[in-house]
Image 1 (cartoon, rainbow, N blue to C red):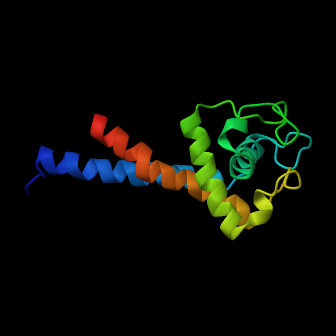
Image 2 (cartoon, rainbow, N blue to C red):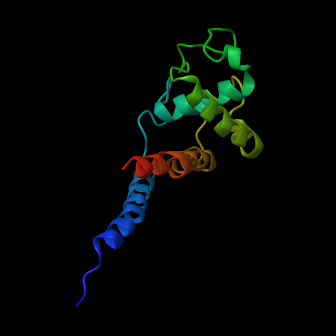
Length: 139
């Protein structure tokens, strides 16, 4: 009855923990989010959807500026530019697959099953591509 070596156990622990974390994130995505279907602000999902709308429809210099096309009181971008560029990537994908999600001025409060899947899938993709590798490298 041989026990696995500590090196093997450590090597198997990281993928197991990543899968467990992804499963937990996926399970959370099956439930409603704060502000779901509650105008006028609609909650955090709407904030991120709106940021994608702003970043794909306005030039970068207008992302953080109040203007006719960017009301900063309605979920103005309040994260650093790297986050805004991530919103731009998600928005670019949305423009190609679900343009109604990022239509300037007309998409406020837009919620549909396919667009929620796109938004939630983007979070899992960033976790897999950026967050988890960084955690594993620093562990």
